[in-house]
Image (tube, rainbow, N blue to C red; front, side):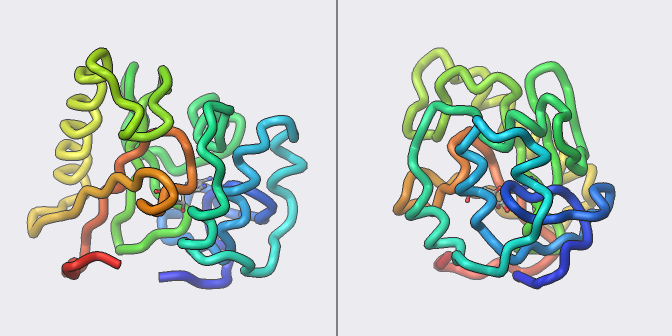
Length: 182
Ligand code: AMP
């Protein structure tokens, strides 16, 4: 679900966000996701102003350039920008998606990217962290009370709809999911 209010969090890009502690945020633009790849700009320049909605999920993913550059998620890991963290340990961080597609929508990421800009870049050495991410998804699902079930999504590359090139698992729940996905 998309909306036009900036009620919480700190979206990637030129979007003003007022209450990073809320979990009910919706975002109006995927532009920020694209700009998140431009790590050269200081966070305050990237995040001060809301842009009108310009890009759909698909457009954002198609416009995103796969890159090993820092992304908005590095800023979240380093606490340079606020996020609504629901779980954290030495290896993994889980925080609420700023543009939730379900009542519960959490992103689970490795703190150290180690080349994992997407699942398609996984190598044998990543097996431990990949398992850790999935197991964390299960822990967070339980923590969030998703006893009725949930969905795990990993978007990969332009066709997969990936817009942030730092591997992440989407944990979605709190409503009936549909199949096939869009
Ligand atoms: P994907 O399109 O699979 O690469 O997912 C990237 C996700 O990151 C999207 O669902 C965005 O809504 C989300 N996102 C972008 N910036 C932020 C942010 N600052 N805080 C939380 N989620 C974000």
